[in-house]
Amino acid sequence: MEEYGKILLIAMPFFLLLIVIEKVYGYFKGVDHAPMMDSISSISSGMTNAVKDALGLSIAIISYEWMVSHLAIIHIEATILTYVIAFFVIDFYGYWGHRWAHQINFFWNKHAIHHSSEEFNLACALRQPISSFVNLFTFLLLPAALFGVPSTVIAILLPIHLFLQFWYHTRYIGKLGFLEKFMVTPSHHRVHHAINPEYMDKNHGQIFIFWDKWFGTFQEELDSVPPVFGITRPAHTWNPIKINFQHLWLLIKDAYHAENWKDKFTIWFKPTGWRPKDFDEKYPVDKITDVYRFDKYGNQHSQLLMYWSLVQLFTTLGLISYLFGNIGTIGLPNIFVYGLFIFLTVYSYTELMDTRKLSIFWEGLRFIFSMGILYFYGDWFGMSTFLSFSNVLLIIYFTLSLLMSSYFVFVEFKNTQNKLSYDN
Image (cartoon, rainbow, N blue to C red):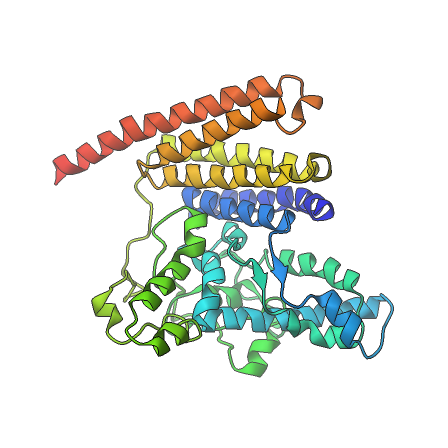
């Protein structure tokens, strides 16, 4: 936990800097592909995923360490060649895990969050799942385990492999010539994120594109078909925690309504999007039928709400940075209390971003929770050791946050609703 927290503490500022650079570049180009609310939602999703991973809230049915211990034919030392071989094995594992996440109904739930943005930018790369509590695909690392690649090599390469997938989530980089033949590029990944019929379920590679070319899932980006981004069943929310479980909730409801036991069981393993016969008529869900004609979500919000959401984002990033930098000293079980607070925080301010009146309930609950933490521990998990007046600052912030939410819900949202009613 502690080591991974330190890695994230180093990586987060780097990712944020690149996101800001992309935003500034788009501003000067006069084409903004990173709307503020969408980016805040994406980064918030990344924060929840990072907290989940740092706290170790996921398990593998078969761990790589177990496979090495029980199945290795030989054992090799951690040389440069070992790292190279392991990297290719991890990418093979990533291709098939990624492909199955797109093609099997149940597995799509953990991946839908990554595709939920209706934009394509560096921030959307951070839309990573919190719903993947169990890793079912570790067995795909079997080739490395058979050759006895040390588990430390895999543990080092896995986060590096993930971080290397960040850069190609952008619309500002065109095709890259020779690199297009063997590497995943922004052009390849734009195809992957697109919902155009020509592009659906293509280019699952993560670092190397030749897996797609070998296994029949490659599609080049076409000049005549501009990619349209998102998911065909739109999320209609900025709340990443809700998005993480939307598809699962639909599957649960469909399995409940299914009239025969075969459908109740097989719906989980059918191709993504499959529903029992006539369910689209009996239990309709919003679905994009024309990818070139649909309204993007969340364009109606005030400037004040956008700026306040930005304040909440950076304040939460600061609180998460403190958690990652002090996991060892905060200790168990306190880190899980901290993690629950972060999840409640993200849920609260993204509900406010959705202009939902119920967001005041979540903000009130967060306020009570935060005051309880300060009362029970005497300070914010030892923060007063580093900053003597931290308690005062935090009380001011939590109070201001509750007041701002109250203003938006009881004044701004109410006035907006009245205006819409009058206009209609």
